[in-house]
Image (spheres, rainbow over the protein chains, first blue to last red):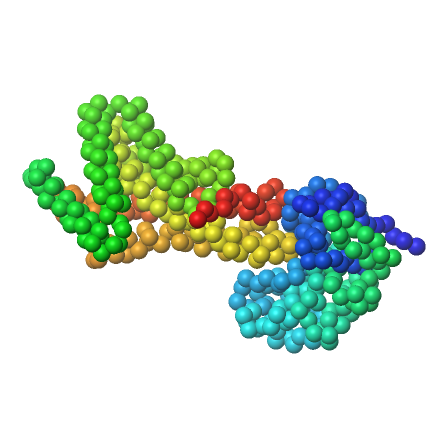
Length: 202
Length: 267
């Protein structure tokens, strides 16, 4: 039986994207692909309420506009494609520590928290950024090419961690990906974003 | 008091320095001769005018005129802060942030000094109020323009970082905290340096002036210390107020980073 739609987007319009309606059930993974510049990142940013937009997003019964911005972004978390760091040490970016099992699952040693950010590879940073976001325990995830810089092994590890998270927490996932094989693996439904509109594939 | 009055000829001799410098700039194709002469002429005219204004003001000592002159000083300083910004706020905030902060800090500090420290009678006695405000305002203006400039530049450069922090659910104060701290620090460095070097490397202008005018050195030193502290207070509080107001203005009610509220630099 289908639960109530967990993440609902209604008549969302931002810059040249939209209006877009989309409902993602709890525990469901929806993928979006499309050409560069088609507005996939803009759409995710608008859902995370980082850009001004028309329309609204709901998590269960809670409207985005009814929560303060930071509270909304903690529950509907955006993971950007290019991870950003502002302290010297990796561990200083984790307010609530990090789950050791998750670290291991992504192939990162415990000592990674003591690494200097500047000395991490792009792929290491991307996996650490995913953990940083997951540690906030979001109910919905907006993922902008979460495996964009990863090799095949790391990509599979990230996919299985996200899959486990989705099932355990009944999280709703909106996943932007360029890789048709990845979409095949992870998505329950997928859409093409073209000309500011979502086009269903299956 | 035994001031040796300066004749126009005395000033003309000093002006020869400017002319000689201009000539050299022309010869070496440095290209600053025009700016040099214009600014020298401007300062001559402006200083004579303010001299006349002060002369009249000291004789009448009407509060209305004191208020009017200080308002003019504030508006000019506010405009100066605005034009020094590479990326200033659009709309009335461009002028408002700096002007409001200078009003809050420089005026409060000066009034405090007049009322509590010097105890002039009446408290707005222009002979004390105008030079003190001028010194505090001038330095506060520098601190605020440095701080604001640094904040807006930093926020623009670190946009992705700030937005990532917002995406992690941090509130705007935390997301901008690094840039804000750095901007306040940058605004306060000049006065901290000036205080450290005072007396050893540099003899501050006000003290030098008083000594030239015949004030006993120790009295002049005491006034200089007072003025230094007032300037530090005015600059520090002014920069904090200005940078905090500006940081708030960089975010909207949904706590989104709004760099579109800054004007693009023209070049």
